[in-house]
Length: 181
Image 1: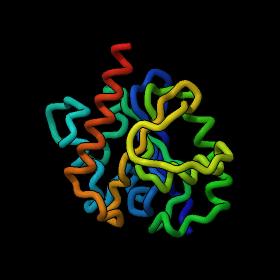
Image 2: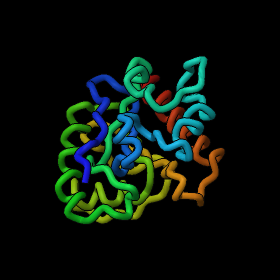
Image 3: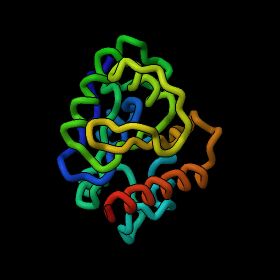
Image 4: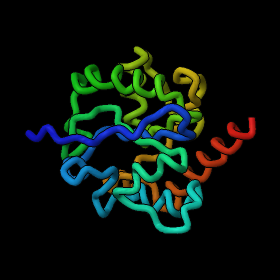
């Protein structure tokens, strides 16, 4: 098993941090978030208008997006071919680490990509079993608001590209509302 994973793109002062469940093996091997060509994260982000970059964004733009106030991390840092191969031990080990990093970075909004990842995060980082619907969540993570968007993985075919883009658009509206104060 490879020890390759993805670096965090976290720092204080970010507007939004996107949190994946864990890196896919392909993404970890190339060192870029959501790098599998079938993953819908980048096309959905481009359609959402959350970043006015003036160009289509894609894998490898993670560091550059820090200038736009966006960061990236994962609940679990162990790469796998499928999130379904993760075990409770992975979340027990990594969710508290992710929580500490997110609380320290203190973005305006923490956006979990997927209900499943958020539920496992809450169970192992907060010792809480939660019912989750997409969108803004009650409560805070440190000082950050929490938002859950659909998982853009091609394995999550329940949501179309346009639906995922719509949730990212709502995320952008929440960010803008918080920035206005």
